[in-house]
Length: 360
Image (cartoon, rainbow, N blue to C red; front, side, top):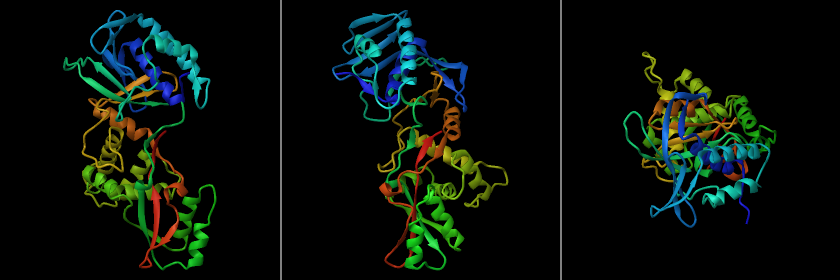
């Protein structure tokens, strides 16, 4: 059976081939530019295939070794570079799900039977690097994000990520509620928020649909749920969607009443911590312990085919990349149950807004 996948899945195989061919992990800056003098030599890459585990060790050639330490194949490094370039060209000329017979033959030769190595966490590739600063050779897991296809999601939407607001002010009649809920414009959620405000009402954050997600946020920072509630409401009220711009806007209003006399970046710092925890393991519906899964960081396959690394050792670069390259998005309001006025048993009017974070 032919191996098929979408652009993102083929990008994982591309990154695997290219990194073996280049023999180095290059760090990127906040704008995804390669930092030429900040890199990590690759010792080997590990893959768990369906039938066995293999290591791809870098010497003068690439040596493929079985899990019991037996060398089973030796290939030229240039072969991997050539196939990486060939695969890049194929990815760029396809949409949706596709096969690549030219690459599949090479994959089978090097004992890769699937595009995505087996994983139980956020790790897409496991690499042993040589840290030039410490002399250590740690095994690190990286999550791979690709710009060759549609922008990937950092925080997936669900019913767990609904922020709940009380509609403050005089109550609406059932007819008014019906009229607002029946707004069906292209930007219907924002238009409903605008209509509620134009009628003299306001929004007060009162909670999150998922207690687990709420407590995960509190674990990161006790005031984070409130900060995020302001950011979410700002997104559905303006044309702002970039995390950085939304955070700056909220910081300028300082709803938490922090002491900013010394110019502390409270809001930016807390949002960067959130993005980092989400990137490396935090899931809204699962209790977050603070233990990172993708313990190396992120690899980004850029639109030009370059691959840059955001290593958690270089925490500031990693945080800046996430902060400058993410935005909020609007998922299906029908699927996740938000964007309509609901009347609670006590007559309180409730309005939910969903949080989804996507890469630019």
